[in-house]
Each structure stands twice: as structure tokens, then as C-alpha cells.
Length: 340
Image (cartoon, rainbow, N blue to C red; front, side):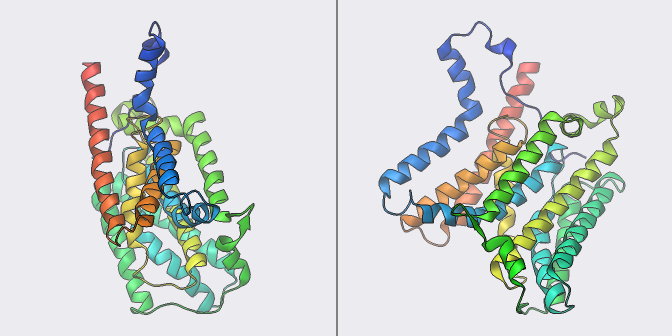
């Protein structure tokens, strides 16, 4: 059973042929509407909050806070491209950031080995999710919800409800705390991963196969695509990305606790869903996902600087998720009607 469908709605050259400049502009407006809205919000908050919003300090804060969420969103969008959903991005980061610390403090492992172990475990978890979805034929929503709940239970068992603390090497802290050209290094991680994923998904057979599977798995199978292998691979990639986000979160917080991490699930999924409404509306895409996270970051930062209460962020995320799903659903129905 497929949880999601993908199918791009960006205008083709044939559709644009013969249209006036104004008509072409209107045709592209829905494609880049979220990008335009992000720019408008940045301009609006910069004018209304000139002393706090358009500052390097605020930019550093946004990059530091949202880079991990952006990594989770990019990880979640890989299975989405294949028509699946992975909820372990929110649950897995709880266990992985705890293990990244406890493997060093309790077992005395060097930090590079501890990081490698966490990344491998993340990939194994993704492989298990892929088996549940493709071999056991469990819907991806249910399978990853079950796996994620188990991971969260393991985190609670491992910590016993206590914080994991200890003195960690400076090299491990530097994974998150280093600044390059005045910006947190996590922003550069995000940029590098974004470019790599963009190239793979847009310009290699792997990306075309994933989108083909998400659009119509049966048709992809009939065209000779080994769908099972690619779907499992998508979950492995998602699990590894989640583990990487957990490592960076551990380097940032310097403590591990089971109460931290679940709050990342909703904004990560919101970013991925918003990504399907822009750049290439109608299907999840890398740059759209980055823009989706950016508009969340800009909107929440501006609202909080206006004095918004602590409940503003989850409210903003929830409402934005509903809007994103509604827009994506409308786009799919519109595309279907045009085909008919």
C-alpha cells in the first residue's frame, strides 16, 4: 500500500509555448509561490523588526536551530519520493543522540567510532523498515510508527529516565559548535547534503527510479525497475540521515535525554510536505524541502520576536502542515483532472 504519490506539476515547454509574458508569469506563480512568500516574510519582518531580525545573530540562531530539522526533512523526503513515509525520523533521533553520548561516556569509545556505530545502527533501522514495508507488506505509516515507538522505548530503557552526561572530547563538540565564515558549520553540512541529494534525485537513474516508483510502483516494475531494492535503499538512506541528525544534536546539547527529539517529528514532516508544493509542485523535491523548512524558520522566528508565547511554534507547525497537505492534495486532484 502506498502512503503517498508523486507527480510533478511544473509547467512543460509545450504548455508555455505561445503564452504571453503575463500568462507565463501566472503559470509559474504557483510553482515558486512558497519561495516568493519566504522572501516577502523576510522583508516584512526586517522592516517591522529592524534591530533584531535582519542581523547576523538571528541568522546564526536560525541556522543552528533549524539545520537539524532540515536534515530530518531531507531524510524523510527520500522514502516520500518512492511513495512511502518514514516516521522514525522523529523517534530515532531520540535514541541516536543518546547513544552518541553514552557510547563515549559508558563504553569509552573514541568519538569517531561512536559516531560510526550510530550511523550504522541508523542504516540498519532503515533496512528493517524497508523489510517491513516491502517484504512483510505493512503500510509504511504503520510500520515506521511501530519501529519508532520501539526505538523510543529503547531510549527510555537505556537512560532509565535520567540524563546521560559526561565530559566529551572537544572534537565531538566541534561537529556542531564550529563556525565557518561566521555561520555554524551545520549549515554547511546541510548545504553539502542538499546539493548531493539534488544531483542524485534529479540527474541520476536512482532518482528517476524512486520518482517512478512513487508515481506508480506497478508500472515501474513492468518497466524492469527493481522496486523492492530501491524502496529499501530509500529507508536505509533515511535512517542514516536520522542518525546523523542525532549525532549533531548530541554535539549541540552535550547531554542525552529521552524527552528531547520527539518535538522534531512534526516540523520535519511539515518541511517535507511543504517541499511538495513548491519548485516542483506535486512531488517532493530537495530544494522545495529546504524552502519549506526555511519558511517555518522565518515565520516562527519573526512571530517569537514579536512576543509570541511558547505554544506559537507547535501551532504554526500544525496549521502549516494542514495547509501543506491540502495544497498537495489539491495539486494531485488538479493534475488528475487535467489528465482525464
